[in-house]
Length: 145
Image (tube, rainbow, N blue to C red):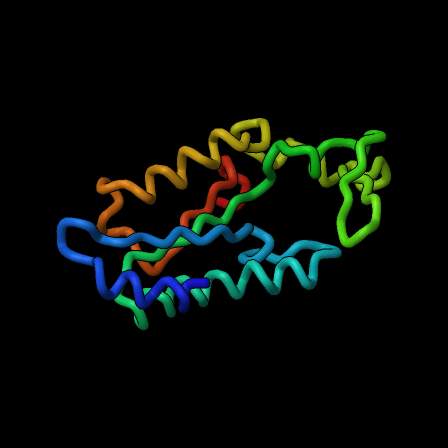
């Protein structure tokens, strides 16, 4: 997708309209996570992609590595199912994985919200973050200090 957009960036980018790419990564890509080999590998690759985009396309590019987010995927399982690849998938963290829902190691005491995540992304997209590029922001509410 970035490659497809690059032709348009080169044509329309000026000093007055700098282009910005914000990639979404995860703390699993930085620190690893038990049982998430594929996910952690993919999210780690996003961080390499972020730096390479800056070098190859001369646009601002940053990533946000989110930690535990309060979403339907991180809550206890419910009867709700999501259709994925023609299969009904139950979302949520099973009861036997309770340690993954423990917030005692998060200094601010709770996981982040989707709105909180959006605010970080919005900040990166704006002019106040003009010199923030080729790097990532780790959003964990202090978990990995």
